Image (cartoon, rainbow, N blue to C red):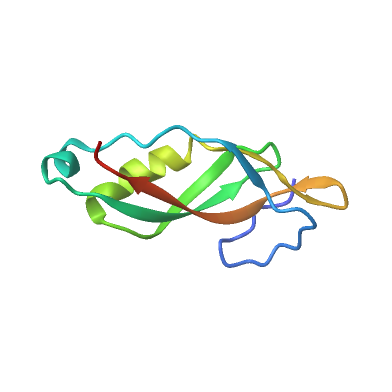
Length: 100
């Protein structure tokens, strides 16, 4: 099996991955007590099976980062396609934390 692409690698695709589902983020207690809301931008490696294999934070509040990574790992995608075959590709998406 070929190695996974690095986050900065360009991967040609005919169809981008489409997110099917993701669990809501679990608010960290310390962020909730601080009444902290915000968005963490993550970059995730979507595997050929549509599951998230790796996640890194691009930007966002330090208190929310670990929770955003855990949340991103719950996402399920329809994988990216090239020549009608699934390919691994990195995607960027926001995880938003909002107090009820």
